[in-house]
Image (cartoon, rainbow, N blue to C red; front, side, top):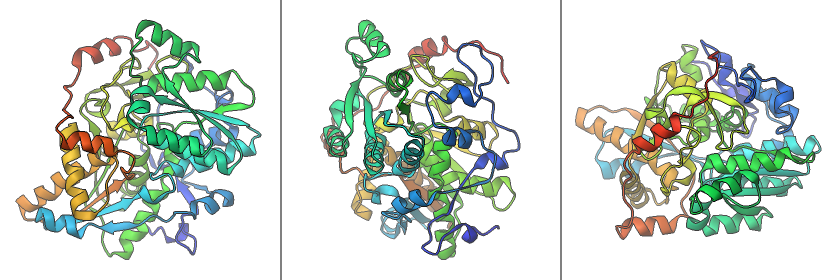
Length: 454
């Protein structure tokens, strides 16, 4: 098995990001221009992103150097700890060895800072003055607001309205960093006004919020758009998680049989899993990799692998991904970061290549898992991370039933200290599971664009 130590600085920080595109047996399908249906080039993305990020988006180099300025900020919290969940193992009575990579130690309490910092850095270097973005649960918006403050940029965040109302302290954190936060759909954009005209009480969705942020960015020469998940360069930046974990597992003299992470757009899943999938693709190791999504928004387990828009207003390029349809608005589950109609093209592609598995879990099971974890390990997980914990517990109980000792690794993508209302609602019996809205998704899928498949 190839060692990763040559990639690491003396302080155990990765010096490079890992690009899984280099090891794919079949290349990723190209992104298409929304007007022509033809593959896009760098010039088509230039209104939204600086060229440095566009180059990373299309790169097939295996390792991409991390700038020194980014490493200096990473050192505020990286490397993040890999923890053996011995108390959880005991509580479950399992022979399995359970490990979790804890990303809640970042200043904003989640993995999102791993890409927010480089995105702010590259935009600042390109002369950008302001960034616009969307956020679901607020973790990405918090991370970009912080990173914008670090590099002297303005930051405007369109926060999905249901989360804007559910999570006021996330909004407060963004504003403390200097970010401007707007509930989406809003009256500030043509896209937002169109949604409100048809659905005045719309809870919003990440697809709508993306449209609003893209619309604002496209109208100003000194403004660019920053995305917290889905795109290749975003997933690339997150691989510091998995690269660190590879070395930490070596230090523990162990290697996972199962790697688990929650998936909404794919960023924290890719961050942990891609370096392990890379070893698998290169024939250096064999590991089960499981992506966990909410049953209320099951893009990987229920959505077709097809070209679709990344946003509701159809301003973004078409990408080939597992999708529930760009107009689908998920139920207002508390895992706001997982309420996206599509999945990252690279994650979708790897699922299509059968390099990973996907499973959907209901909301009540995830909160029960989070409570079990909290009472055993002392950390309150974010509602999104509870999805990974739920399946880690399933796998640990399977090991108990089968009498096998396997190593289970999951990504605890952030803490739930700003999500206490969700936990209070759960313990008071106010939360419930959402049925898979087959009719609504069928309506949204009926609007999939008709384009040539490349």
